[in-house]
Every structure is written in C-alpha cells, then in structure tokens.
Length: 136
Image 1 (cartoon, rainbow, N blue to C red):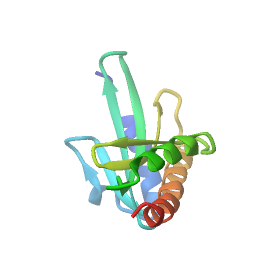
Image 2: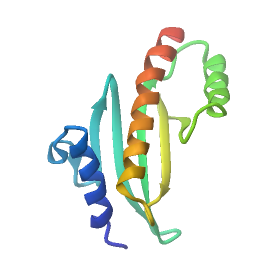
Image 3: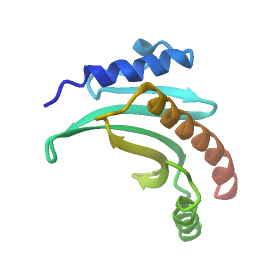
Image 4: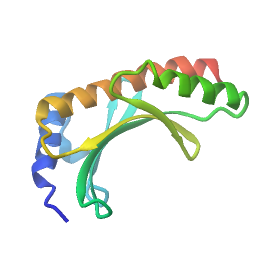
C-alpha cells in the first residue's frame, strides 16, 4: 500500500481554502472528508486499490434519495444527463442518486482537486433541487 499522506495534504489544503477545518470533517477509518456545498453533502476520499496497485481520489455527493415512483423516467433522465455533464457522472447506489468524479492520484495537484470539488458541489447543489422537485 502506498503512503497516501501527500494526497491527504492536498485535499486538506483545498478544504481549508473553502473555509472549512479539515479536522472537523475527517473520518480516519475511511480516509474521507465530508462537507457541505450549499444544500449538498460532498464526500472526498483517497483510496488504495490493491487490485491494480494504485491510489484514487473520489469526490461524490449523494444528492437525492431514489424516487418511489416513476423510476424508469428518473433512471433514463439520469443516464441521458451524463452526456451533458462535464468532468462528472451520475450513478445510483443503494437508495441514493450520486454525482461523482474519480481519477488516479498520481500527478494530481491542488488546482485539480479544487476543480473536482467545486464541480461536484455545484452539480449536486443544482441537481438535488431540480430532480427532487420533479420526482418527489
């Protein structure tokens, strides 16, 4: 397993820049930070994957619970939306819809982490209002 501290430091610097104390939103067990962007909860994680011997950063937001009705239309809209999103994708897991981005950490810098964080936060904050209202 690779030492992930270098990448944790980059993430924590970005979190500080948006005015949040990283120690207040850090979960050491999962190596994840959880913070708010508008109404959206944004999770940042650095993960080691033994299967391909590489580390990844994933930034994601559970922006709404899956609708109880009209699910086919919701899933189609979510899939269609992926084509128009930039640098992120929508997915579902459990009872939630997510907007997410993932990449290898090798070569990543603070500017890229900040861009990822802002994209996820902005899309999640927009999608939670738009899709929750439509599929309540």
